[in-house]
Length: 531
Image (tube, rainbow, N blue to C red; front, side):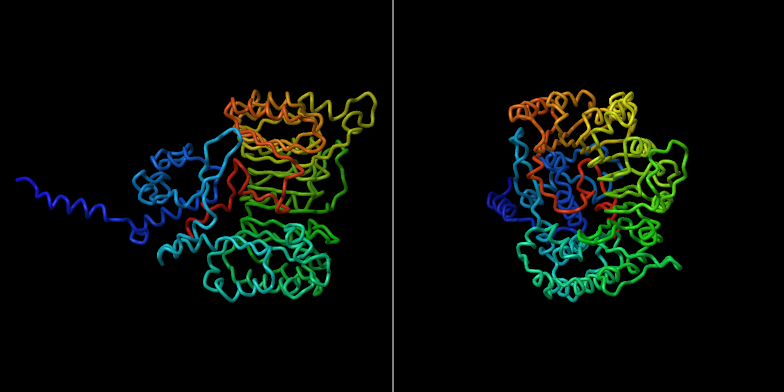
């Protein structure tokens, strides 16, 4: 018996009127939505193209994904049906890509998670740990800090995992030029109630004590001398940051700490102070420090074996979980650090402006972690032209000839990301030509590096995916040469990014590890899934 035409029409009409609603989705599906929106938002360099979104929609596995991960209901790529159901494109906006790629990329809006949490109570509960995961208090004046402490934080402090702040107003002005314009040149304005260092530090300390599950800190401290008899901190009541010494030292659950001294501080950190501060942080995975004086004299020129006398080096070497080391202007790092056994397998190293790290020291230390090192950044290596060309003996060519001879060649099979800023010639970079798994290189141009040498780099690294070069005023690269380089790399399928150093804007004293291309930070989202 044929179906009634009127009944068929009614069914069709009912189907057409049915609309999916985010609020009506099962809890597990909502978790999946939040997970993927958060991934898109945090890792735009990995999810930056429509083709990748299409792969996710089609359920195609990403390289490196394990079967067990794909079987996880929240981590597996969503099906095309689910993607269409969620209409994920509305959470994103289109941005332009490189000049050589006219295809737009998909980038998430900054408020994607916030928008989801407003859908219903269930979405709010799922999003809340992500919204409160990080507290960046650097631009918070006193009134805003007080409002945070007495307001939403009282109900959400348990979700905070990362905190960053700066107490010194001068430090804040260096990080945020807009603040300098707001305060003006009047010193009295800087001492106003809302930016008073003492009051702000009191509020920040209260917030820190509320966040009992924090695992990552990025802060500024003005160090004081330890008590010579007890080896404990000395608290200076007139120093606003000294009240943080003991509370921070008791955060034994920390996995990441980044320390800097305010720009106008009279003292750098001492090794003894740092060791006391992190003494009980046995789970540290990432240690970053700006400005550390050494307790030992510079013995780099001595050829006989010497034991490591660095308290900081000896302490860090005992941390079994340590994966990342970032030292900026730290004289304590010297060749003796490579003479001791390290319990941890370092995967990420950054040396920035350290005066005791000539190539021999760097070579020995990096090679020590040849089976684990994945990321290496060498910024502002010491270079004195007379020393590197003649040393002290006219019959020797000095270290420059050693660089060209390949004496410092490194074999780091796990290395995927390399960044170098120095006045040394391209030969320094070529000492890494045996590291065949390098995918990303960042290089600061100097007058000794030519466009032809840049053009030949892919010959040494067959897996190269991205090259970023920074051009300064001393570089003599012509615009036509830059255009030719772009076309060459475009033809090889390699992303070429060219940045003018004069236009570069660094928003922080430290480069954020979790934003570095080709490297996953250890306090990333994946570590907090269980929370």
